[in-house]
Image (cartoon, rainbow, N blue to C red; front, side):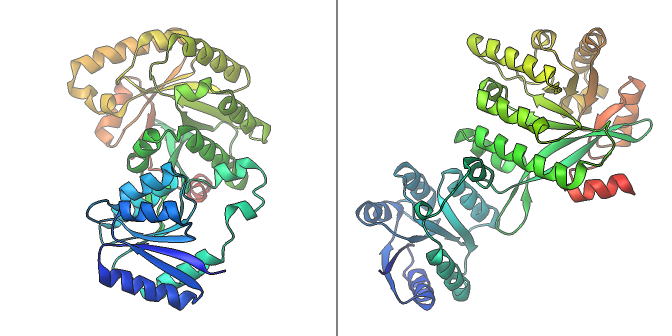
Length: 383
């Protein structure tokens, strides 16, 4: 049975180059053409394609629209994205396709290299469709779903320059191997409602990193993982968090939660699960304190161990009286509750010295070290 390939590109020359590349990979292929997203979608609704090779920039229906339509119609074709746009846009297109649950094989920059396309086509058409593969444990599907790498930023006691822990941060690995920061992909994950999948991916990858690199490290070190408050009302996510300790992790895990508001009914469930987590060895941190929904009432209500001062507050303390007044309030509360304060965004010796004069020795920021891969962290600690 012949394979079917749809080439979606508004430029005739590009369509011909890609068609020739497809035929170089396999002669047993039926090639179809479309010049925009809507034309392509019409053809996909009539015929099932094994592979779609699509451009991003097209008039009367671009590639971004096509990815959205393919997701809504649950199109299972493999996808190769091509574009002459900026490299970051090409990578974002690939990322968007994966977040739409689409089977993106690759994203290529134009001008197209015919041999490269031929190899990708050959590889794509040889792979069995998902229905023919025993996927086994669904957790594996989740873990492999997003190309996330983890990096670890040190938290230090500044006067002794001792590392007390690491914040676990995520980076998106694009098709060229670059690690893209959260500002690049987290808004898309939130918009598409993929926070749960993303969080489970981070937890799974942290467990792997821990057993590969961190298990022998000093037991006093803490590892901090960011988590959305609403996810702590989801029992499956809470169970996944419990799995961290059940997988043999011996270091303290700190859950950093932002102060996003929840409905009254969810607040009760949220608090109940926070208490369960505390009783099972987790520590709780209020992240980015001082910004947006920041409020003292939640800090009073929750059984927290830590308050993290937002970097905007940290960097503005020196010349902003309102920030100083807010910090004084937090320091009094922290003293009563017996919790530590960590100052984020410490990027200069001046800021570090100013904080130390206020008694702020627990710090995090580029002055003390940027986010690094697990292997580099171990080398840093064993030097």
